[in-house]
Length: 188
Image 1 (cartoon, one colour):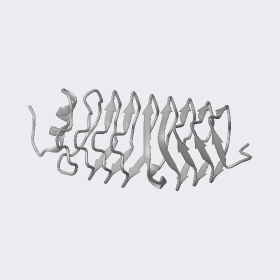
Image 2 (cartoon, helix red, strand yellow; image 1 turned 90 degrees about the vertical axis):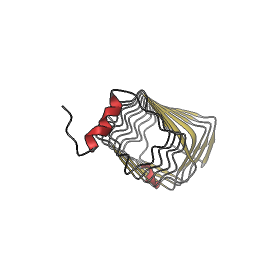
Image 3 (cartoon, one colour; image 1 turned 60 degrees about the vertical axis):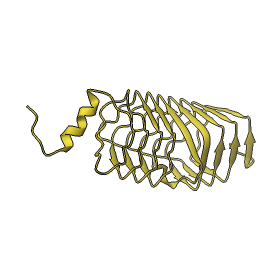
Image 4 (tube, one colour; image 1 turned 90 degrees about the horizontal axis):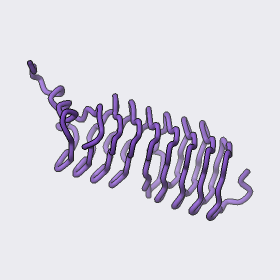
């Protein structure tokens, strides 16, 4: 499908690709595209939108996502750690189950109305990140900077305050009671 290595202001609909190598996309829109199990290598996505796309089990290597939004996408089983900086994305109404974010700069990242089940956030800078109305069931947070992060409208999180910097992070009741389950106490 891709005949050149540079695309600007293009719209791709119902595209199915299993390999993208060294392609630059600027201000492009991908609608109902299937990149599941694709290898995405050395690609640059700048000011792009993915709408109703499937990137499940995609392998991301040395690619950048700068000012990119994923809307209503299926993003299951992805390790985002293979991406290069900048990594500036917004996830809205997405399924991010079984994803891995390791050693990433995720400052001010936005997760909105998304399922983030059984995913891992390890040693990330997530300062001022937003989790708006997300379900974080079984997701783990280990050694992250979560300063000023906002979890007020999210649920099912279990974040160990001894392993993460939660300075001025925002939570709401009753979900914030999950912190008590990490203490060696009995609540009656």
